Length: 122
Image 1: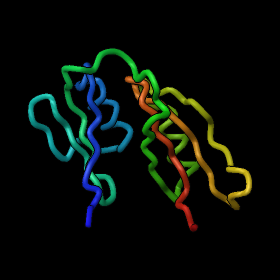
Image 2: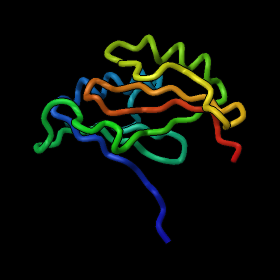
Image 3: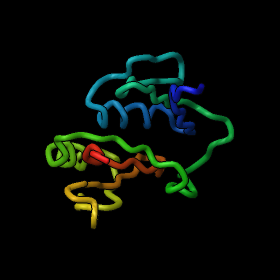
């Protein structure tokens, strides 16, 4: 049986992303080693680090999207939308036919997409 443990985001500017994600998660990194930073987010870990094969912004930012949920959607949307270097890709909206599910899409400084959403009651 597999257990999802973590995700790594490679960057040519890891210091910029580390600063961005410290603001996004509203806390300093739980781990820092050289050009690598990591945050425990819920039951998983998100790592940011230098990768020799990465240059510039994400060419297909929709390919992998980090979904982060909160029951405090309005407060978190307001806080996050004011973070330096954030791009609001799609403002907060209620998903059609999903009975109270709200979602917003952001991009980090490398162009990677993040979605803020209410918990899915399924």
